[in-house]
Amino acid sequence: MENDERRWDDGLIARRANQDPRRETGKSREGRSQEERSEEGKKPEGRAEGAGETEQQDVPADDDAEMTGMEYGGGLRHRLDALRELVGLSRTRLDDDALTEAGRVLGEAATRQRLSARHTVVAIAGATGSGKSTLFNALAQVPLSETGLRRPTTSAPIACAWSEGAAGLLDRLAIPPRLRRRPLAGGAEELSGLVLVDLPDHDSALRKHRDQVDRVLALVDAVIWVVDPEKYADAALHERYLRPLAGHAEVTFVVLNQIDRLPPDAADQVLDDLRRLLDEDGMALGEHGDPGATVLPVSALTGVGLGELRELLGTFVRDRTAAARRLSADVDAAAHGLRGAYVATGRTGLDERAREDFADRLAEAVGADAAGEAAEREWRRHAGRACGTPWLRLWRWYERKRMPGEVRPADGTPAEEELTARQRVEHAVRTVADEAASGLPAPWAQAVREAAVRGSDGLPEALDELAVRETAETGKRPLRPAWWPAAVLAQASMTLVQIYGGLWLVGQIVGVFQPGLVYPALLMLAGIVGGPLVEWACTAAVRGPARRYGQDARRRLREAAAGCGRAMVLDPVAGELMRYREVREQYATVAGGTRTALGGSRGTGGGRGGRGSGDGGVVLGVTGFSTNGR
Image (cartoon, rainbow, N blue to C red; front, side):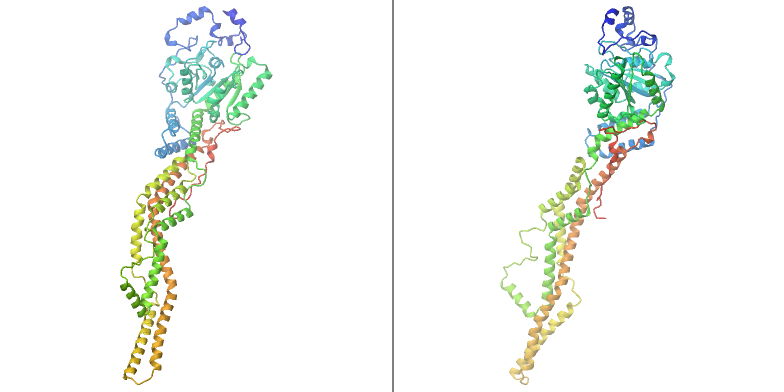
């Protein structure tokens, strides 16, 4: 068997290492002797698949040393509170599917906060043959996870804790006690607090293995992606994991394993190409002191780069901010997914012009212009009756009596027109609802339209009653101008002058008075000419007051219609817009969180084409919620 293995070498996947004690820990299962494998078969079933050939005992399920009560920084705490408030305010506006991820993040945040704060859970993930189990064993310095040519080798997650107190975290990952390990002799002090999890292949042919990978990756604090020179550009890795998790660059390590298979120049070229692919995925790279993912070349077999990786992991674990960073990245991802439901495409709300246009449409529907014109005509008619000559009024009375079947419209409005046109009211409501919903995300635009439609129920009837009441008020005897009594007295004087001149003339004719036609004729002429002159002067003088009276009637009816429309339509719409402003402010807090409150030097940034924290640029342009213009 060993001779066959020595002859087999494709130069890419497998490579025998020089014999030394350090590499002995990483030898493959096929490299063991038949005696060792037969001895392995005698092990209890409880040590099952994935257990290494060591004398290490499984980690107990209940550690007394576990420290709970993790505290999140102020910035992250505020973002979580805002996300919780956002979900609560949006329950009636968004469907459950849209809020699923946000609810999951809140649940995981609460769960992680109750667990150990001095442990950092790091998963090792990779494709088939990338050497992740070998790297897992090399970091633990003891063969804990099974390696070999048989695929898949790792069929269930295996955990290794460098210190006690991680039982709750492992229970959360659903890793049974029989698959929990400890490094040799307690492991190095530099990795104290690290909980390392070896995952199955993410490209495994078995669906249950892939499901385990997805489940654990959603719960760990950080992840080490292990790639090899042959499959580092695999589309399944980049499209399914690295690209969607680009915002988690702070808690991501990308390790190029098996560099011992490449010449030095080729290793540098592959590493540069890997960085290029990560940049295209949108994942920021932590180079030159910039925050982002750590890219590192290693060889788990020869130990090249392992020292640097262990040092980076030790610093990362001692920082104790990985959980908060991971959760902050999850909040970023949830905010990015909700962006379409909260971020408007422009300025939203109703401005003064939109409210005035709505009031004008309601005034037109209720017939405010016609009512004003009718009031003006009524004023003039009343002035004509008061200041006109008695003979003309008598003639008009006679005409009305002579043709009793003729009905004169009271206000000049065509009989076929109603006081309120229902279609015009509905059009006015639809127009103002569309203007209020313009630019809003679809759920909130729909909520605004529904609020307007609900409020418009009964609006035509209310406007009808309003028009009848205002018409009745306008139909009362109008107020007289200050000069009106003088005009009535002048008209009465002209009438008396006519009567006096006529009686004088008749008296001369019958011989009661002395003959003299000049004076009685002049008196009668003065009365006959003066009466129409007074009437004409009153008609000219009444135009201004009549116009103002009509305008006042129109204004009163318009204001009453606008108040009715404001109470029944604009106020509910303003309430929906106010609710949207509240959730928009909460979303701005969720999406605009900074990393300064989390501490540490690894921050999220957007690489070329990356998403990063682009949601932080939310602008609260919600205006015009008031319905009274103030």
